Length: 415
Image (cartoon, rainbow, N blue to C red; front, side, top):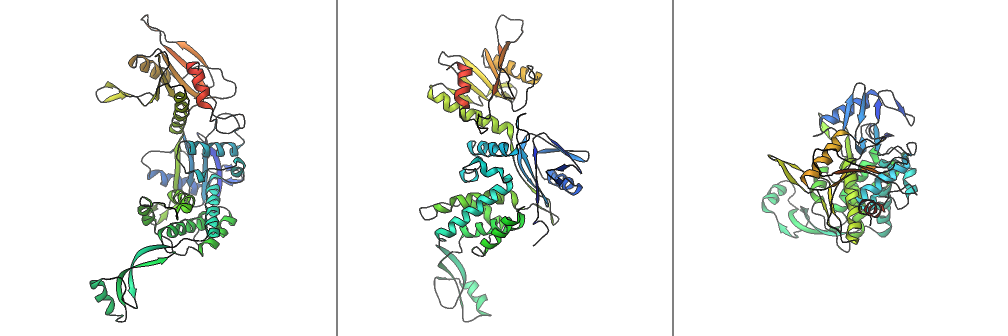
C-alpha cells in the first residue's frame, strides 16, 4: 500500500481563498498541498484556480481537486446557506445531471445521501454499492478472443509465435481461440476502479470494502486500455445491468488515475465551469418552457462584428408578437442595482447588432432582490432597454429549481 491511502477532505466555495496553515473543517492546508496545486496547474491548458502568495484563490470552477494526501471539494454558492455545504453539494450534483455532465447513477436519489459524504466519497460509495448489486445478481461471462499457449490444438494456430513458444514448451500450441469466462473488459475496468478506490478513498470503511470486492475482480486493466475500450463499449440485454457500475467506474478513473511527472503523483482534477453550467441549465429550462408556448428560442446566435470576430449572445427569444429579446446569463453576485460596465456595454451592443429593443441580464438571486429595467441613454430617438432579472436557482426545498423555465418565461414574456 502506497502513501496516498489516507486522504483528508476539505470543502471550500468558489472564489474562496485558502492560505497555507489555514484550518478548514479541522484539516490543515499545508505547504505540500499548495506545492501540489502549483505542479498540477502547470499541466493545465487554462488556470482553474489562481496561485497567490502562500495560498490559492479559487475561481468559478467547481468540483474536485485530488492531491496526493488531500481532496479539495469546491462547491458553488450564492450568499445564502454558506454554512450548509450539503445543500450546495446536492444542488451541484442535480445541476451536473440536468446538464448531462454526469450519468444518472452519479446523482443521489435522496438529497440526504450527500449530507453524510463529501462529493468524492459519495461517488466512491455509489460505485461500491453498484458493484455489490452486480455480485448479488451474479457476474456475467462472455465469449472473447484470446491468444496463448494450450495443451491441445484449438482455434487458429499462430505459426511464428508457436515456433518461438515450442523452443521452450514443445508440448503446447500457441493459438488464437475463443474462451468463455469472466475475464472480460467489463470486469477489468471495474477491477481497475476498485484498485483506485482501495488506495484513494478517504474513509477506512470504503477502502476496506473495495479491498474485499477486489477478490472478485483480480485482473485490473491498465489505464490506457480503459480509455481505449470505453469508446467501444456497447450494452446489450445481458450487460445492461453493468451500465451504472461502468459509468461510475469511468467517472472515478477520469479523476483518480494519477498524472505522472518524473515519477511523482501530482494530483488530478474534475472541475466544471459554473458560468457554462448556469448558461446550459437556464437554456434547457427555458427551452422546455418555450416549447410549450411554441416560442422560438435560439442559443449562441452569431453575427459578424469585425474581421473574424463575431457577437454571440447566450440566447435570443422571439415572443408571440414577433418581439426579439436578448438573454445573457451571468453567474456572479449582484448586491446593488448596478451591473458591471462591461455587462451593460455587452447588452447595449447586442441590442444594436441584433436590432432588439430589450436585452436581459440573468443573475442568480441573492436574498430578496427585485428585478428592474432601465433605458440606455443615447443620442437617437430609438429606445433600448437593459433589464436585470434575478433567477431563483434554489427552490423552497433548497434543491435545484426545475420550475425555473416557466418562472423565467412569465417574467420575460408575460406568459
